[in-house]
Length: 493
Ligand SMILES: Cc1ncc(COP(=O)(O)O)c(C=O)c1O
Image 1 (cartoon, rainbow, N blue to C red):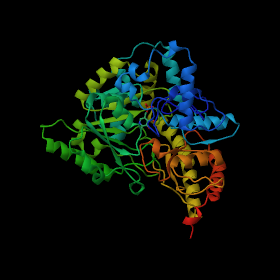
Image 2 (cartoon, rainbow, N blue to C red):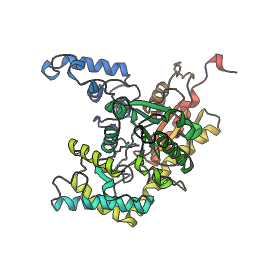
Image 3 (cartoon, rainbow, N blue to C red):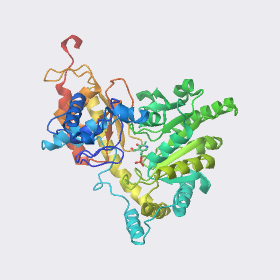
Image 4 (cartoon, helix red, strand yellow):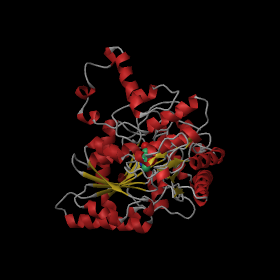
């Protein structure tokens, strides 16, 4: 059930990787990777462990003074991953021999969600054929061509070849977009809950402007939520389907937001630098039922000069470890981003590029692959959704939003203020998380990991690393432990 992920940490194995935070604590990675794993840890315990390990080590490994003196200001302020803490807790339970329904990883179990056979075969063939040298900095021509026609045919986006840039996954292209568009102090607007924008802002010195979004709009922004903050901003970041909520921007809402960007740029009339839109659509091939993915440029072609769209094979083909992503954008920006990617060497591996080109050309194979993959994902998300809605119908304080895309479900366990059978009052989402994990072996990530402040009981449930049987086993346990909590006496009628 627990697997290593590129986007988020390995759970069973304990490897460390970057990921979202709950609390913006500085660099706890090393301690978390090696913290004792026999009981659930609190952040304070983790930090204590880290300090103790540091004092145990021979001084030569630690340099000659406090980290703040040795690091750049950027690195000194870098935020560590709170999902690592969640991962550590899951690992602790597994080490005790408990089986955990692990809904925390934004990745796929490759036994349940393998990559397309054709992709694997072409990677093997490319390796055998000696495709092992540096790729061209912007991507191998066959892949750029394949991306171009795939995006044209399936998304209606007709970019020139120079508007396509390949790199090692979506992260480097997102970082390249931030790096090439945002100067220190520039305002970057994004909705929360959101995946990782706070980190990118910190890395480039941008001023983060998070816009809280709520369940009423499926946690997606609208024209009216963004209107008050876009004046003077440098970058607006949108993500649909959205990590962590599994919801999508509907075309009308997206069109309204595009109009806002166009109006703001018309207002600037060349006197100020433009507002850009970074559109992260890495989950666009994973939408369910009649939900359709919309893109800004197809809705409003005149927004193309200001829009950079991000895509990758990571999620759509369960290929998070293969590292192929790309950007579609105006040629001048793409050229700069390509230079940046070249300087940091974040090219996608050549055999994977060659194989992805072959994959994107095989439309029937892709359609067949997605039929199966989406059916598997949807059955898990639907089972979670139905289970939670049934509990709600039985009067429990839970809720969920119908899954529309990606691999996630937004679920609410509104247990704040309740008392557990052990007499402990659940005050925060973190308390609720630990209670569900400890008592029901149900592992979920609170929205705090995605920039949300309020303890409203919302969680991300990720369905890529669990089976349907795991879900069916855990739901009665969740119901049992929720029934076991009760409101403190003074709150009861
Ligand atoms: C919304 C979103 N964008 C980008 C990424 C990163 O994708 P990649 O693994 O291709 O770097 C993730 C990974 O979790 C994601 O959820």
